Image (tube, rainbow, N blue to C red):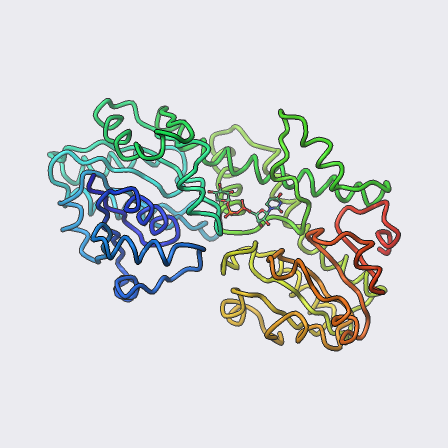
Length: 442
Ligand code: UDX
């Protein structure tokens, strides 16, 4: 199959490279010339484990190339994926689909022969209908089908998720398009999760429903964690106890500082907006959004309580800035809100992150960035673990104890068993550890 990916951002790049790895011929198109030149040199604009190697091997094999020439690429393609950004529109929370519609106009002018146009970007319900209308209006002779095919990739695990999906959702009822999409995904559905065909609007809604459900699941366990702290229970054991029930499942039940990232915050807001516009409000998701927003500031209060009620003129060391490990993405990262709230209370912040510091420098002011956990811990009155990078899972507590002013660990990801940390003479506060000796410090 000849596949064109419009938009060499996170989703477009990962999907394009993986399609090439399955043996399809793929051209990734982007209108940012510097990005395309960098990709041609093998420089990857994002941090994603395994991506660099796959770009190189597939480029070397001649199956993957990069261009700014949309016209030529689309004319060559059997299938054109639209994978451009759909950021939250300032002011109203709606997803901004103007880049998607612009891509549709350009595809309409360039398509030649039967072409399947696929929206991969997360788009509000009804966007595919509008894409089709735009294409038919721009070029009434175009022989196209418009299909919805949402992605469910997690940053940091995107290549594995693409190659071993739980399911592939394709929204189309047209037999020709079904045949093409079956061919595109043949390498996957031969031995992996099901290829699930449904109507376009259903497919568009599946993406929002999936992300909103997961955001709600995380928020549920976060509230249970708060309750555990009041009632003397342990949230990790509650999560395990309910997770054994297959109807609930054990995934996405890790209590923490609140969800962040490029998808959950944006998609929950967009769903709330769509639902209220459709006069079918989603109160559960509205509440999820509000609880999650409050939670990040509540985490700062937890740190302040762990420091005896004040952080004024105290050095606080923050471990982890990205919204999750194995990414350099700082979008809606809890660490940013927590740091700002602590600074508002007079704290001096030192921070370390394996991949996020370059981005964080542009977003935060008055933060001292160190080269490792021990450098930032020197003289600190609390070490706050915000993102569970692997390299934070085996900290040398003796070394930390020797360098910190007050040996105090606030573990917002429950990485460490409290007793283990206390054995080294530390105060320990985790999340939802109500039965724990120091868990009531706040
Ligand atoms: C998510 C979806 O998982 C993916 O299917 C979709 O396509 C895009 O959005 P991503 O944002 O990359 O992927 O990361 P994910 O691993 O889902 O984590 C999202 C946020 O939830 C992170 O801030 C993470 O720390 C948090 N989280 C996740 C928890 O706090 N607890 C959990 O149990 C799981």
